[in-house]
Length: 73
Image (cartoon, rainbow, N blue to C red; front, side, top):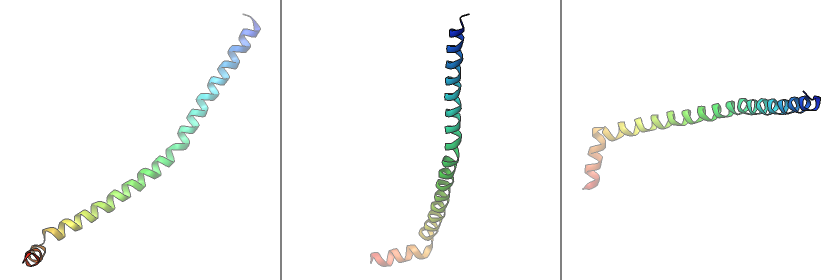
C-alpha cells in the first residue's frame, strides 16, 4: 500500500476513536446529574404521597362529614 494512504487511514481512525471516547465521557459525566434529578423527583413524590394520605384521612373522618353538614345548614 501507499504510505500516504496508510497515514490517512490511521489519522481517520484516531479521529473516530477520539469522537467515541468524547461521547462516552460526556455520557458518563451526565449520568450523576440525571441520578440527582431522579432522587429529587422521587423525594418530592414521597412528600406528595404523604400529603395525600393525610388529606384522605381527614376527608374520611366522621367529624369532617359532621362539619360539612353543619356548614351546609
